[in-house]
Image (cartoon, rainbow, N blue to C red; front, side, top):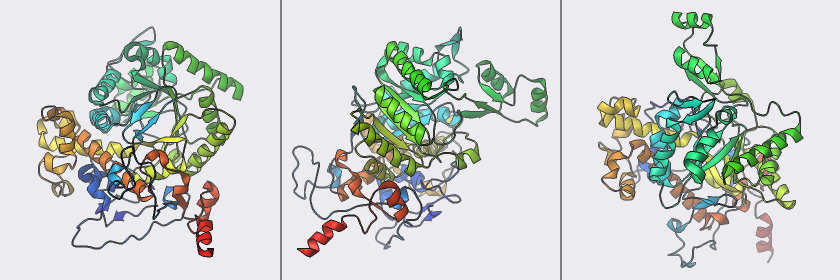
Amino acid sequence: MSDKRIDALGAVNRGTPCPSGLCTLCQSDCRGRCETWLSALHGKQMLYPRDFGSITAGSKNIDPRGVNYDALRIQGYVFGSQGLKEGLTSDADDCIYPNVNIATGFGNKIKSRAKIPVMTGALGSTFIAEKYWNSFAVGAALSGFPIVIGENVVGVDRNSRMENGVITEAPEMDRRIDIYQRYARDGYGDIFVQLNVEDTRNGVAEYLIENYGNDIIIELKWGQGAKNIGGEIQVRSLEYARFLAERGYLVDPDPTREVTRKAYESGAVKSFARHSRLGATDAEDFDSFKEAFLERVEYLRSLGFERISLKTGAYGMRALAMALRFAAEAELDLVTIDGAGGGTGMSPWNMMQHWGVPSLPLHTRAVEYAGILEEQGLEVPDLSLGGGLSREDHIFKVLALGSPYVKMVCLGRAPMIAGFLGSNIEGVFYPDRKEELNGNWDELPPAVKQAGSRPRGIFAGWYDVEEIVGPREMENIPFGAVALYTLADKLSTGLKQLLAGVRKFNIAEISRADLMSGNREVEELTGIPYMTEALHGEALDILSE
């Protein structure tokens, strides 16, 4: 578990942070200052200790206990270079970290491209996703990585229209897609849209293919890392709760009951939980589940979708094997595997704490199973791994652990922090639009004032974004998008530095050999040699010459 304070960076968490380095509870009105929060302001400056010229800094070294990504260590080499792009040589003037290529691609017959090997987690019907969508979408589009529109967005939209139980108008879905597409550049990035039980019943896939064609990647959803039931949101309006019940959702307490109305009006009931249904409850056994899944994929293809992915959660090994096997047989484009402990919405707290397989053990088996399928002659779908990840070292370790199958790293809460922060700052500068922006501050907190007094001075990435969109369009760019771009630039630069350290100048060259285990338990789990065992044989050969 990480410490509360990282003095070298000037970063502080509220309470004991998660292994991701984020606070256990991340609030949209936060006034700072975890590492991710500060990175959304200062960008790649946060790669280095603070107060240069006045300090020396030494690492306490990460405690290698536990079975998590912190217990993996990154190798370093003293000679050689691999993966230099055409036109560059092994000369030291070319072998510099800005020349590292971290662009990636994923997909089966049609390749999606990303400037940085990350994607968002699912941003669905939670009000956080709705309120800050412009920041998330514009920031991801300008940074060149994919975004995922999560489940239930259409079903909970009070302005959507249905005829005979099928969606005919979906303004919130349209808004989310349109804002991302408006700022996507140079063929990088993509949009996923999740489908769960209710989305399938409501005809969301049919709506999407009719209105957007193959600009969308459909993501079938089995689950997530935060919980082993369907998604939830919480609403405080009795009227809205009744609307959701009429849409076919499970709402608790039942807003249609007279006793619930009385309890609400008296103040005893203050909110309602809306739940999605479990999938595949009618599958009697493995064979019937597989048949239904493959039929669903085939139906989506018959509608015209050329790109289909699968999102699965922290289930046990049987479900993991099914996800990979079914996806391979169905020739899916991506499988996202989310380890336990994550979450962006309203997951039951103790369920989040105690269900499922944590990320590193789950990811280790996923890579092992992918290798088994490849040995059988199946084409393994590209993988994206997520669950409690936020920093550039996480990205490196996931890609190295999962080589050659893992092409993307799924980041859940980290990009959202940038959106919150930027919106809060924008609300201070434009108080007449504070409510529209979902800003929470009346004045800038000290941690922001230390960065600057005007937006151009606060965000390290401001002028980079302005160069992309132009000064006139900059007036329409949410500050949260600038913050997310700034964070992405820090992650990109940090990842390039780590890759240069292992002398890999193209991300495609990364491998498991670039990692070491920090303890014997992780060595046993992953098969990655313990620090003093990694390359030990080669060392002995040198000594015996």
